[in-house]
Image (cartoon, rainbow, N blue to C red; front, side, top):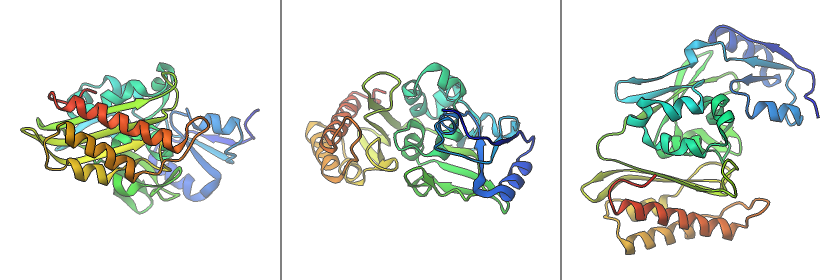
Length: 289
C-alpha cells in the first residue's frame, strides 16, 4: 500500500513550524526520524494533508549538561544517546536500554523526541523518562513549558502536548554517586517489541533504597509506574524476602493488556520475573543492567 497524497514542507525555524501547526491543525504531522510515521503513512493509518519535516532545525539537536539536568534534544537519535559519554555518565539507564531498541538502522534514524511524543506503551524511551522522573520541554505559541513525565503520558498514544506544541527536548536529573538503576525486557527475538519490560531507579544510601521508581512497558496503555512495588522497597534493604514481597505486590497490582500471543496472566508473571532478576542484581552492588 502507498501513502495517500500529502504536501511536504521543511521549515528552517521552530517559529515557522509553530505557524504551520496553527494554520493546519490536525491535518499536519511532524516528521523527525520517521520510523513510525512512514509506516503509518504507508499503511494509511495516518492521512495528513501536510507533513512538516523538522530535521533541518539545529536547535532541536544535541545532548548537553545544563546545571543539574541532562538535556536531550528532540532530534537526538537513539544511536546518539547510546554512544554519548554524557548519557553514560549522567543517565546510565538510557545507555542500558538503548541496545534493546529495534535494530541498528532504526536506532541510527529514530529520534528521542519522536519516541516520547508518539508515546508507544511498548517503547523504551517513554518508560525510561518516567523511571528517571524526567521532564518534557514543549514549545508552543504561548512560549515554552515543562511537563513532568508523571503527567505527560495520558493514554494510548496520547500525551499532554497541545496540538500546536512541539516537543523540543527532555530534561533528566543528573545521576549522582548514589544512583541505582536497572533495565530488563523480554522479547521473542532481539529487536521485536518487548512482551514486557521494566526500568527501575532509586538512590542507594548504604544498602537502603530511597525514592524508588519502578516502571513497566508493554502492559498498559501507557508506561506504568507500580506504586505498590515501590512502597515495599522504599527505605528498605533488598534481601530475598523483601524481593519476593515486592514481586508479589507488583503482580497483585497490575492488570496487563493482552497482545496477539500473550495473555494478561503471562505478562503478569513475566513482569514479576523481570523485577526479581533486576532486584537480585541489586543485592551485589549496582544493578546489573
